[in-house]
Length: 569
Image (cartoon, rainbow, N blue to C red; front, side, top):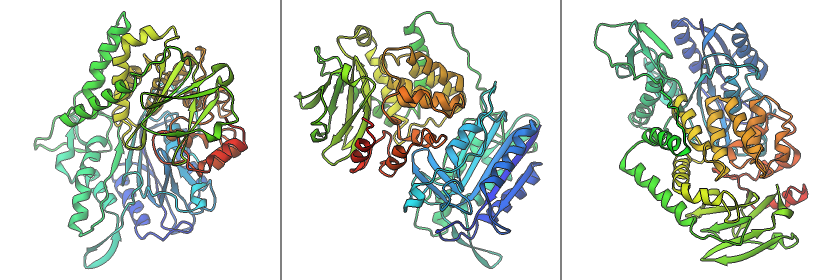
């Protein structure tokens, strides 16, 4: 089995200041890879343009070799992030050519179809917001082709030089009396990979090794300090998503006699056969809660704060309402709905109740508009009350509760605290504006199962389960969530249908035609729409310019005219 690396360095890309160190970073990274016995492909713009075809062909040759056990894709250059999980590496002809950029997150998604057990993306690039129309219009291209028949779930690790929305800095340093601008991120990354940081070296019995998780923790601790030592006043905090664990590693060296840290504990999990839903809930609850974020007093207190918030929001119960929404913590406006039938608005306990005649609105999108003009597309779910909860002026949660006229209501009352615990855990995992679980694959699978078992009492739990399975590369489990929800009388939420389609590599996106609302519920789902021309319709393309960064899809003022223009309600 071989270890391979595609290494890209682009100093110049259209309309942006030229970088000084991207090509040097790439060459230094290649030198490390060769020292570790990697097969390498180096693409840099000091000898000509770097195109998407060059990058795609380089990746494809290693995928088609059917012999790679590890593939690293390293990029140093300019980067753009349009929203959570919607980011791009800019190649030579970007952003003037919309497809001349690498769509990082969709490439990550399809890397799980490659058959390569361990894939690592390393991004020494800015994650800056778009500043003009060309950057906003980027769709990008994918480095991997979907391949059906995958039998295993690979490990995919993501290294980012900086946090979403921030820049990756080039710092002036002096070496051998020569001043130059360098990326401290790649410099520190390579020090770790070359085995120069004893604290992150572990032993696998035969060799000393460097693994992704320890390397990522070292970078988070070390880079801010290195910037301070270089008298750089701006901060840069690396980010990562690591799903691999031992025996997977990046570097290996002959074992030294000096004592090293013991390897991490094994990650095998014993699954119990449980007879009842309550027993399954209790078992997964212990596993997931034990490993969530951290068990600091602060995280426990914050989780309880969310539980209290959701329980408080659940108190107003309307026995005669079959379908609708309760708006909590914000003042909606309804002038834009005067011509729509089947809507009744009333004030209930300082909250706004919107009652909807489900026969007229089945499978449709309710465009909630607040006083500041922001529009939130909400799915109308028959026999559910959607609870739209704002906290400090920000949409904190949208969840659904079976109405009292529903057959599910009595069972919901018995399990409501377990449901609130899941909602609280989701809120904790979504604090940075995207739902993301930064943990190993085993935990992703357990968390997805933890959410999905109660999705019939809140369909949004199915959305989060689908995203967790997709992050783990468990496409069959995404399909299982979709199949279950498709059998129910309610429409399938758009994100579940979308992830099911692209997980089956069906880019015709047939499932989303009958889904609600008309677009992804979570903003991070918008990046997947670019995989298909059918998903990236003219209406969606126009609305992309109005997207507001955040967890839940929301639009700036002006989007409502486009929604009405294309009759998307």
